Amino acid sequence: MKLPIVAYGDPVLRKKATAIQPDEYPHVKELIGNMFETMYAAHGVGLAAPQVGLSMRLFVVDATSFEETEAELKGFKKVFINAEILEEVGEEWPFNEGCLSIPDIREDVYRKKTVKISYYDENWKHFEETFTGMAARVIQHEYDHIEGKLFVDKLSPLRKRLIQKKLNDISKGIVDVEYKMKFPAVKRGR
Ligand code: NI
Image 1 (spheres, rainbow, N blue to C red):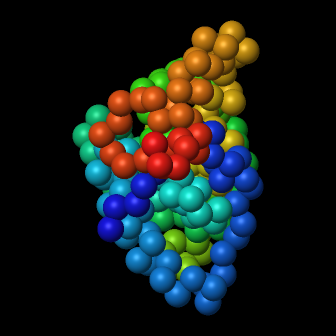
Image 2 (cartoon, rainbow, N blue to C red):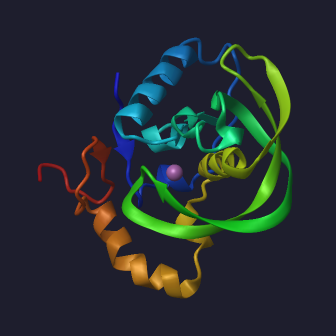
């Protein structure tokens, strides 16, 4: 089942998400399936639970469509539950990022090259793994979501000012988007 994606301006995107316990969410696999379906329909490579209105430390990624050109994305389809970044190292490098909650805006964001992360997969198997390059980038972006952060937070004050009207418009639903979204500032009945 496809879920509506929460748009910029919704307070759920600003909350630090809480860890989940295996017995607390017996239907977590169903939710994960729905998140993948939602992400694919919107042509995204990552989706975090707050983006579907749930303040849980859960995100999914699938960047295997780029595995031909980016070696580190080979087989990069994963579920991250209760993720904690343990270490971020290396040179910061820029990449033009976008976000399904912030449609029609793409900006260069600087992030460190390598990330070491602790997480559980959909079967509650624990991992401590190191990712680099584009794989690290996708994880860092989604991890920010479960920390209540968005890529636009990382822009210079000038860039931020230049996109502020567009951001306000998104929260009001004034944006062309081909997937289903939930806009925080849209009055009921409009
Ligand atoms: Ni995002």
